[in-house]
Length: 233
Image (cartoon, rainbow, N blue to C red; front, side):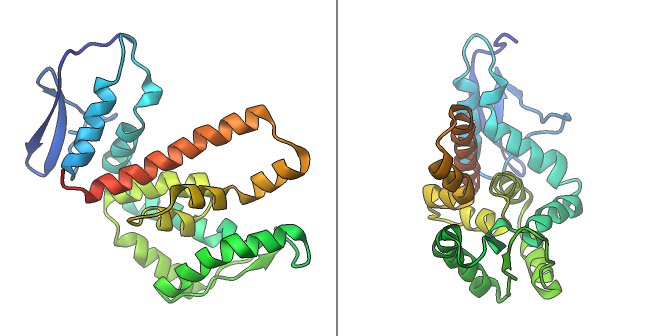
């Protein structure tokens, strides 16, 4: 598709801010007004439009897609979005370790245990650690508390968490990534610990490395999306 606009601007409206192209407001994928709660996020969305060339690259609208998810999906069916996110807590990758005497388990404890322990302290919960890949249910009290934590999030934060958790296969990492001052590189490395371990043992596959790079960029974009929600300008 060819570029069809000349000017991009941001304007304040009831309920937040929106992007306008040649004076016409942007709508979401299903046709709802795309109004976001932060001027900083609206400016970032506007930048995505300004950065387009003569031919539109739909892959470059990462933040727009998350905003659309917040409005079209999280806002209309919060229970389903929260249930999907809670599933990552039920099978959080940080809880599934190699056998205790294996070298991989040593690295998992060093990298994952501080993250899991911090989550347990923050929410006063207990996560079950598992040696091996056989699923073991997390305590009902833990899942109840994590559901409550998700319910407190606004629609746009849920959109960021949806991307973060799906990339990390971990609600613990996703929630940590959405916090102010989170270390994107460290959290992404934690999420990819097992893949990186395998690469160290068997070598780096170029296709896998390219995929990891793209996923890392999307993880960083989701963290930026969450951070922009907190900025006023």
